[in-house]
Each structure stands twice: as C-alpha cells, then as structure tokens.
Length: 390
Image (cartoon, rainbow, N blue to C red):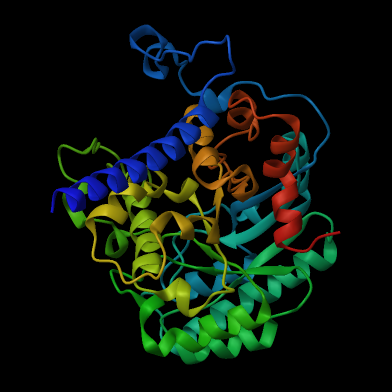
C-alpha cells in the first residue's frame, strides 16, 4: 500500500510538473522580452485615467480611400415609399439614398466601398407576408441597381422578411448569387422571437450556407425590440423627458447598452444551442464589435448550460466583428480574443443630416496601434477575402 501511494504521489507530481511547464510556457509567450519589464496599468496608467473624450473623432491617418465599410445603412427610394404607404414612414432623410453624394462623403473619410443594408427600423415585426415580400424585393432590386451603377463603390446585404420563412427562402433563391449581394442581412431577434432557431427558418440557413454567403447580424430598433424592455428606458437610464419622439427614438440605454447585450445573447445562443455545429460552413458578421461577447465569453463557457461540441472560445472565429467598440483598448482586446483577421471596419454611418456617426472612421483603429499588416486586414483585407473580391 505504501508503494502504491508512493507511485501515485510520483505520478501526480509528474503530471503537475508537466502542467506547470505548459502553463509557464504559455505565460512566457505572452510576457515581455528578456530584459524588458511588463507594463503596469495601475492607477494613473489606466485607460480610464488617461483617455481623451470621444476618441473616434480624433484625426485619422491620412491616405487614399482604401477601406471597406461593412456596417452602414441606407434607405432606397422605393423602400421609403412603401413604408410610408403602409403608414410607417422611416425617419431616414431621403438624401440618404443619393449615391453620388454618399460616394463623395465616403471618399472624403477614407472609405472606398460600402456594404449597404437597411437601418434598424426594418419592418419585419409588423408586415404581412405579402407586404414583407414587396419590401424585401424592392430593397434588393435597389441594391442591385446601386451596385450596377457604382460597382467599385457599393455592395449590399440581401434583405429578407424573416417573419415569413417561406417568403424569405423564395427571395433568397431569387437574388442569391447575383452580383454585388455579398451577405444576408438578418436581425438578431424579432420583437423577442428567436426566429433564427425556429425549425421553420432552418431552410433559409441551409440555403445561405449552400450559397456561401455570410449572415450579417444587426438588431432591430423600436419598442417591441428593446432588450430588457423598459428597464433600459426608465427614469434611471438617461431618459430626456422633454425630447420629442423623433429625437428619443433610441431612448435611454436601449441602443448603447441594449444592442450590445442583444448581440451577445444571439452569439451565445448560436454557440450553446449547437446551431454552429449544425451549419459548420456558415459564417456570421457581428456588428457592434460583437457587443459584450468578447468580455463575457469565459463566463459563458464556465457557467451556462451548453450543448456545443467544443469550448466556447473555439467558436469565436466563426464570426467576423466590426470595429464599433469606440475605445481603442476595447478594439485591441477584441483582436487579442478573436484575431485581427476577424475584425472588419464598421461605421454605422447613414449619410444623412445628423446621422453621421463618425467622419474619422479609421481613428480608433489608428489609436489601437496595430501594425501595418493588421491595420490593412481590418480596413479591407479581411472583407476582400470574405466576400471574394479581386
């Protein structure tokens, strides 16, 4: 018995030593080079103590228009007309679909090409199947016309009325594979309904995978789609009681925090539900930098019920993430988590009065101090690869 305990002790010691060696190698790989000290971020060296306000407005590096913007919105004329006819006018200014003007503004801010998608007030939660089919068909035809008129400037996401899976599949089959339509644009949820995971919607995901198109995820706006309901639109959420309805269409924390949580929930459900395992060749684009997911992924792996076949972190590179983190250290952290080859430029610009999120879209990328190779990947290289652009 003593010998058995001794052998067990030696065996466990060897295993511990091996594990320790592996751990030390991992730590060493992330440490500073010999002779250099690891930087401290304590107190006055923290970002919170050293940051400047609104870093996304700082002047960006000068250079020609080279980048590709995956996250910006438009409202083509036919789309606006149909919504108005149905009694739900869109708030976007008609100047938004002036393509020549958009092109000029893009080039002035360093953007060479944009992927056009409808805004957050897409009507899928309130349309009938017939109305939804009309709207998606009009939007997609307008996108095809925009690409034909400016093939080097505009591409687009395919718009589908996700409340109608049969109609969505029909429209996807109608336009899938046509020039300039490089992804499928879907909401994260539909007025609280998890349509992405419903069996009726599975044929749309299957067909999207067959077409080799990534799915660009963007939450819907409007009260039915507020994450956590009025909890993010209460008196403690920065509500301006004197604001008019148009100015307060994103009240309180419904957009800033709500959309970040909404994106994290959808990514998490795609992972833990086994959906990514079911569709192994389906790729997703997460707007808002993936929301909260880069920060909470470890807790998701440790604490949740999880039907995924692999650890949570192994699924993070099934997504591409736009750069809308607004703080440079947040963008660097995202790159450390998922890889610089999975980050793509997103601006959320709408090119209408009061709707330009930033006229320095590369500013945060520049301040994150990526090397030139990674910077080029983020600005254009990753999307050129994903969308198979020349």
